[in-house]
Length: 86
Image 1 (cartoon, one colour):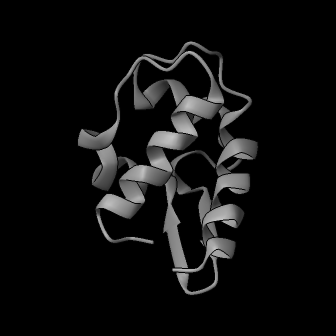
Image 2: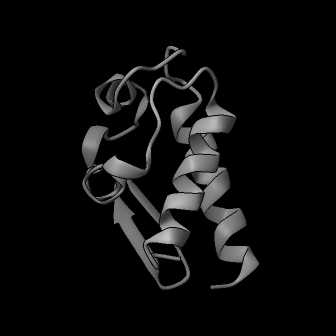
């Protein structure tokens, strides 16, 4: 995985999740902020997944509640790395 893919995904996540009403206490609290709801797609290079796929694969890697978008995105990126998705 290139640093560009990580940086690109980080930017997409920050944009998509920044509209959430923080603090968020579950994945469902993020859905209203997503432009296409659970079907919102994140893509960079050969990497592509929807918000629903993220929720299913990273559910155990997230530590709700999140007080801000940065801590949420940090955990999402780390979960993608830990699961070999990036």
